[in-house]
Length: 252
Image (cartoon, rainbow, N blue to C red; front, side, top):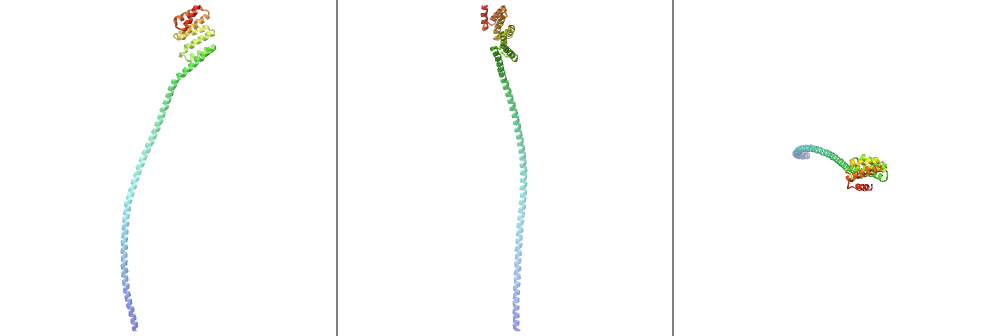
């Protein structure tokens, strides 16, 4: 029994020590838990503070970003306006350049046309003079080869086509000569008289009078022929035709 009591006592002492140890362990655990809670609360507070600062920073940055976006948008709007203005100016300049080009091209064409017209006016008399000369020479060549009727027709056409030509008196003279060559003396006389009456100062006038005298002589009117020769010498004394007239009067 004693041993049992001792044993029970020993167990009781052990149980009391264990109980005290358990109580100590619970206090330590509570302290540690409290410390952990405090640390957790501090950490949570620090985290919340960081989150708050971050949120504030983000809000500030968001505001800055919004302002930046607005500024960019305003710049873009302004740039679009400037681009539109520049595009309109470029279009206006291009249109003006086109109008200017068309105007210059039109003026150049007009100047070219005017220049060509002037050239034509300048060249026209030369061409006309060349045609006139060729027509006269063609008619004269017909006379030289003995085609008197063709020569008469060509010279008459020449007189009609070039009535103001300086060669008309000569053409009229050769018409008279051609008629003389065909023995149509009366027409020859009438033709040459026109030369003397219309162009008395022309070099062909003395030759026309000499031809008239020849035609009159061929018609047998010697008196008229001699009078024509005498008038020729008096009117055109220095001409070669006057010398021939003198020689003819001496023979008669």
